[in-house]
Image (cartoon, rainbow, N blue to C red; front, side, top):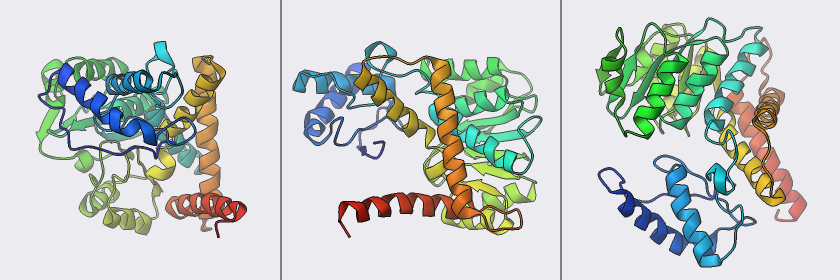
Length: 326
């Protein structure tokens, strides 16, 4: 679940909706025999949202003549789950809040630098605002915007609409909201902050970026994207002994709610948002506790990379031994 996905060299930029639909249908025509609710369950990722999942699910249903939870991230009207869109970003912030709580702190008054401006980034920003933090940046492939006044909920809503419905660029933000600046071709890690959330793509936060964040007083990093910090950056964060949550733990909220979506599909029912919010928070709390169990180095320092690696490995290894593979 969540791992049953791959990629393609199809670039949707500049393509019509019908061209994207035809590609998704052709892709599913080859993929359908390799996936299933009890085999591998794909979900969306970069460039694949509810629209593309709909095209693929429709083709799967057309070919197999059955309705199952074979894809997650579906529309609410046809088997999707509330908060699935928000889950990865919310989960990364819940994990961040747990790290801070372990140090007797919270997000109130903390400044946050976030990369990206898609689902993960905007919903991470949304949850930080809800928990009393101040979001300073968002970005896309063209560069980043810095709003020293803070990116409020109204501004986040504008970004969501601009990026999703109008397919706009993040640089347009500065024309809409005075006081903000746009830096082309750069990532936002040079902006001083208390916490950082890389939520865009792989290898976007390099060693030099990590050193800059540490020098500017950043105390915690929570990965919303998949492996956004390169190996050198990870070593810098660990060497500085700051709170660093790897994506395999911090961004598990999306896959977690994918599992909850599948449960709802199996039961032929929909849970309320409050129930799902609490389930997501409980899941992220549990992941954080597992990381502490295996990553507590004493002296108040928790190595979350070590904790996540050991917890993940042990779960797989125990299953392999139980199944008789080893």
